[in-house]
Amino acid sequence: MKTAFALTLLSSIGSVAAKSPELNPTSFAEVQSSKNTFIKFYAPWCGHCKSLAPDWDTLAATYASSPSVLIGSVDCTTDENSDLCQEHGVQGYPTLKYFVDGNTEGESYNGARSLDALQSFVEETLNKRCLIGTEEEMSKEESLCSDKEKAYAKKMRSKTTEELKAQIERLDKMKGGAMKPELKTWIMQRLHILNGLNALENAKDEF
Image (tube, rainbow, N blue to C red):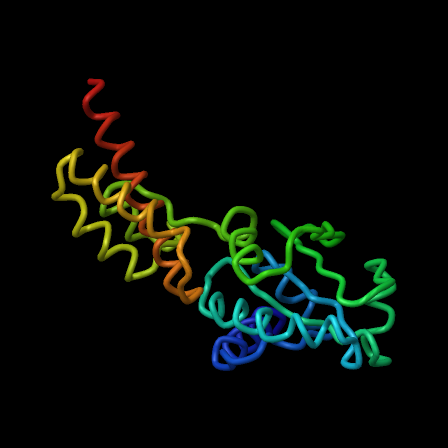
């Protein structure tokens, strides 16, 4: 029953791409058991919370279909959530905390709150990457590779080391520019794949 609840919750979260999912104590515990989470503890009347909301919702939409990350929100003004917010030491709004690998205590996020900074943090700390290997290895569910990533890796396998390096240089230059969050995520995913394939090619050359 617990697993079924989690799957239902995650499915509904993925379908609401325009807003970060609102969590209560039960759903908060459920998603923590299956994903790394980045949580905004907030109050609806809080001015800073209102300012953060558009970027937070965009961040949530960017990772709505992620197999490893959930961006969520907890309204600390409701009776249902008051104990949860107190448990996590929320004293001001918004308070941002992240929870990795089932850790239930979490860590405070004290970095910049621009969309670009938040997404960079998610990519570096919370997003579990596709495991780069052979086509057979990447086809396994535990590889965490999406169909899009598998298709891109398959396409890039035919490239020479020089061509892989050229693609890496091109994407490295692009990633710092202004762009939609989902495009930046795809650039980072491609760089991860290219660097992984390049490392595999270099390993072959050593033998």
